[in-house]
Image 1 (cartoon, rainbow, N blue to C red):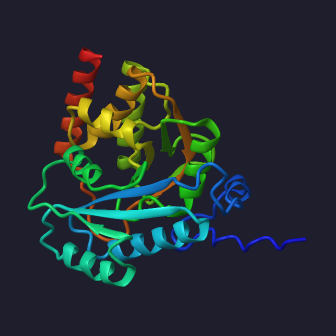
Image 2: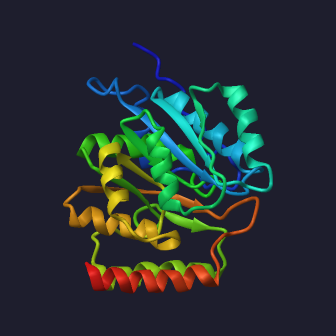
Image 3: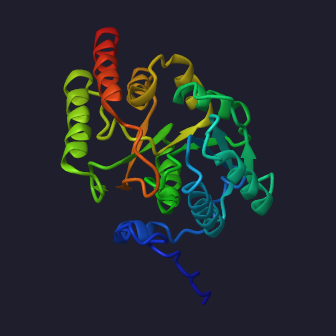
Length: 274
C-alpha cells in the first residue's frame, strides 16, 4: 500500500485560522488529475507599497503550488511604489527564478482593471488567479479553488467570506458593516447570484477574464463587483470557495471615504445600466 503524502500545514501564518476539515480532505489530491497536466496557473499580484508583505505572500504561493504539484507563475505588477516594493520583487526573482517570478511594473497607479489587463498580456497560463498581495488571502485555499473549478468546469471560482466556513478576521465593526452593507445593497439591486461581490480572491479561465475585463468600466472598489455582474450577464458559470479573510498585517488599508463614495456611485451606475 502506498503511503499518503504528508498534508501541508493548515496555517503557515499564525494569524490565520485552521482550515476546515472539508478543505483538508479535499486538498489531499496532490497531483493534477489526468487530462489537466497541461494546465498552468498565472497569479496576478498588483502591488503598491507592499514591500513587507510581498516576500511572505510569494513564499506561501511557492509553498502551496509546489506541494500541490500544479504548474504556476507569479506576475508582480507594481505601480511605482515609493517604498521599494519593486526592489524587493527583484530580489525575490533572483531567489525563485525568472520563470516563476515575472516582473511587469508600471510607472504609476493606473487602476486595478488596467493592472489586470497589463498582467494578462504577459501571462502564459490558461488559468488566472487574482488575489491581494497584503496577506488578506491565504494561498492555502488555492488547491480548493482548483478542485472546485475542475469538478464543475466553472468559468469563475470566487472566494467567499459569507458562506460555509468563510469568515473575516481582524476588522473592526465599522469595516465589517461597510463590507456587509456593500454586499447587501448589491444583492438587493443587482441579484448577481453570488454571495461575496466585493472580494478579490478569484480563479478565472483566461479567456473569460479577458472578456470580462474588456467589458468592465468600473475602477477601484466597484471593479470586483462588476466583474461578477458581467459574468452573470454573459452566462458564465460561477463556483464559490469559503475563505478566511484576514486584515492586512503590514501597511495601511487602502479603503477610505473616497472609495466608499465611489462604490455607491458605481453601484447605482451598474443598477441603471444592467
